[in-house]
Length: 342
Image (cartoon, rainbow, N blue to C red; front, top):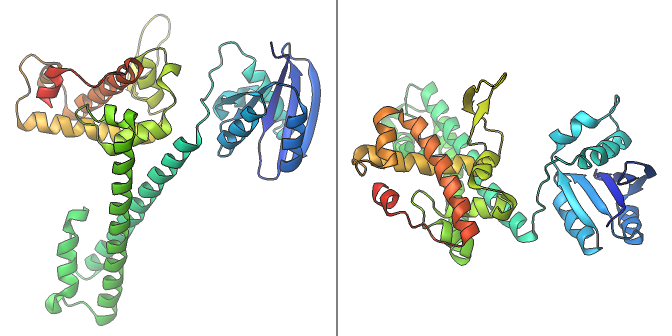
């Protein structure tokens, strides 16, 4: 049994540590630089090291695990209630230890290098998509100032390009040059997005987890890679409902006095996977709305009595639970009713 728990408050240059016994007795407090911290942890026998799940925590978790320590990451919002009065690095490190010693505390699974690399690629693509959207909106705004109204959406980029090239569009020469520059930037962003999309599809093709997830209707390479990059091992969830709750696909509770009150979807989970799952579920709902789903199926019953967006959220929840089952049982998607309905 490990007798020491070390709470670590991470920062860029200075790292505060708080060592305590498993009963909570203070053993040491230290403020160290990055180099000193690594040397100090090398000199310590195996201990339970707890850190907040911040940007560099996964890197330090891997480094400390190689030194023989048991590393646990804890969400910052679970540490905050244990900070005593004034907030400083020493108080934060102590609060991390106090929070981690609660028997009911939940921890974050450390990510591997491969997971973090895939997350970087995914976020890079998302960032470029946002930049392209900004450029398209800027182009629409410039054209609107000269009386040309263009609807929202990237699908109207050809129409805007034709307006800029049209000599009868009454655009001043300087404005036309600036619009052409915006169009060139949009084209460059689109090429980069397509390149990263192909890279994501290639990675999804190489991974057994992503290949298995893609057998489910409504799940493509983007969703599959997001699950592999951002989600912990499915064995860390007791059931599929826990995974759906981790994603934030369950209603908020306002229950009291034995009376259950449920509100809107909590959105208190992993936003990237949740958003993509809802998009995939909405595609399935839209397809089923145009072509009647299998009579008597769950999707047909839901569409008959609920709004489409609500059905999409419920379907995304159902998809998340099935993902958990597929990955824990190592099975491909095999529900013929839902496959026909999709």
